[in-house]
Amino acid sequence: MSVSHSGHGYGRGLGGTRGRRSDRGRGCRVDASTLYAVAYKSSDQPAGLPELFSDLVRCETRLYNALNDRLRERHAIVTSQFEFLRHLRDHPGSRVADVAAAFAIGIGATSKGIDRLERDGWVARRPNPADRRSSLLELTGEGRELADAAEATFTERLTELLGDVFGTPGGAAVAQVFATLRAALERDRIGLPTG
Image (cartoon, rainbow, N blue to C red; front, side):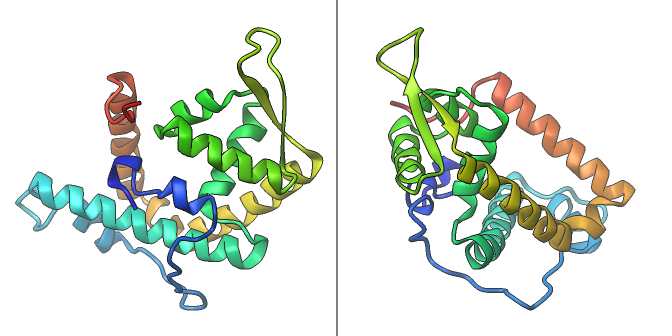
C-alpha cells in the first residue's frame, strides 16, 4: 500500500486482494480521548507534526480496514470500490480522469478499477461526444442498487466507529480542522500523483 495514494491502496483494493484485518463483532469505537490524542499528546503540548502525521495515517488505515471488512462481508466489495460507485452515482458522466482527480490517484489505477467495476456489470462506458478519445461513465441499474445498499452499510459502520465522538463539540471542531486541511491541500493541488 502506498502512502502517496492517501493510504487507500486503490490499485490493489479495487481488486479486493488487500490483506484482511478483522475486527468484526468487536464493536470497535473511537472515543473522545482517542480523538483528542490525535491532536494533542498531552494537555499542554501540541503534538509534533511527525507524530500527528503518523496518527492520521494509522487512524485512516484502521478505519479503512474496518470499512473494508464490513463491505466485503455484506456486499462482496471493498471500500475503494464503494467510493468509486458512490462517486459515479453522484457524478454521472464522469471520465476516468475526473475520477482520478477527485481521489488524487493515478489515471492507470483508476482505469483498472473502473475496468473491474465494468466487468462486474456495475459501470457502463458510453462515448464522449466532446472527446472521442475518452468515455463517459455511468452506473448500471445493478451498480446503483449496490452503491445505495453499500452506502447504508458504510454509514452504519462509520457511525459505530465515530458517531459518539463526532457528535460532540470537540468532535465537530476536529471535523472542521480536517475539512479545512483538505480544502487547503486541494486548493494548492498538493499530493496529486505525477504522471
